[in-house]
Length: 261
View 1: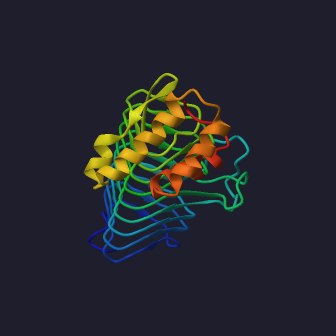
View 2: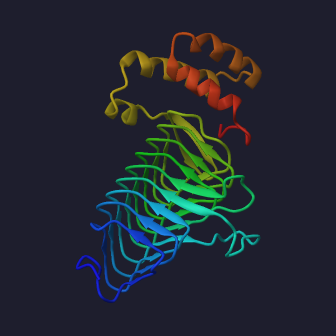
C-alpha cells in the first residue's frame, strides 16, 4: 500500500486513486470512486461510488460523500452518481449525496474551487457551480441549482428545485423558498431581497457601469411595483446595453418557482 494511504484506511480494489492521493486513518473509499491528482482525504471520511473527485481537493474528517440520497424512492443500485471538480475545500461533517432517478442524468455535481464549510448538506440532484462559499450548516434540498460566486451565510436553507443566480449573497439564517435573481442579496425567514451584492461585485472587478446597470434592474424588479410582464419588457430594453441585465432577464424567464421578491 502507498505510504500516502494510512494502513487503517480501507480502499476497495475497484476504486481508482491517483498515486499522489493521500488518505487518512480509518477512511473508507468504496468501489467506483475515482480520485484525481493531489487530493487529500482526511481521517474517518466515507466515500461511496459511483463518484468522481477531481484534482487538488481537500476533504476533512467525518465527511460523507456519494452516499445514497435521503429521497425515499432511491435504491442502492440506482445508476446515479456524484461528480466533484477541482480545488474544492470540503470541511468536517459535509454530506454530498447521489442523484436520483427523478432526473435524467441522476447526477449531483459540485464544480471547482468551492469553499464548503462544516456540516453543509448538498442534497440529491443538486448542481453547484464554482467559486462558491457555503458557510456552516447551509443546507441545499434536492434539485437545487446554485450558480457561481454565490455566498451563503451560515444556516441558509434552500428549498428543493430552487435556482440561485450567480453572485448572490444570502444572509445568515435565510430561508429560501423561491428563485433568487443574480447579483442580489437576500436575508430573512422567508428571505427577502435587501439590495444588490455591491461588495461582492466590487471584489470581483465589476465596473461602475456594470454595477449601475444591475442596480437599475434591481429597482425595476423589486421596487417599482410593476407586474412581472412589464418588468420583463423594460428589462429587455435595458439588456441591449448590459450583458448583466441580459443575464438577469434570462434567469427570470427561466424561473420555475417564481422569484424571491
